Length: 123
Image 1 (cartoon, rainbow, N blue to C red):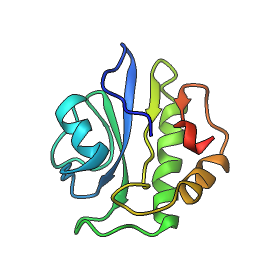
Image 2 (spheres, rainbow, N blue to C red):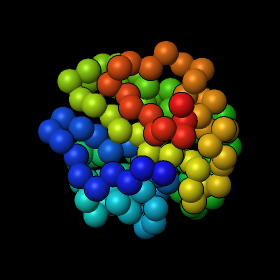
Image 3 (cartoon, rainbow, N blue to C red):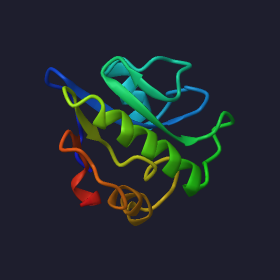
């Protein structure tokens, strides 16, 4: 897994979050401590980060079909913000417990804009 420790201007750190916005571990903690994620906000653009929920308000893993809906919302958001470059982490493959194949197959179903950069493992 590629570690993202800094961002260039107009880059956004895309991480797996929970609906409660408790960014306590994994990439979510990096988003909070390094990239402006807002404690209590679980979805969308916050600072130089974007949260894709993979867990619910009780920090239980969401079903894949619900995660897919959040991924589609992210893809649509990225298409309307071409001035930004979105660096996607291995969303859902850490604390949420899904495999790289399960999550990468969701991204592969959709036409991504060139400003969405997937992790190498998803390609």
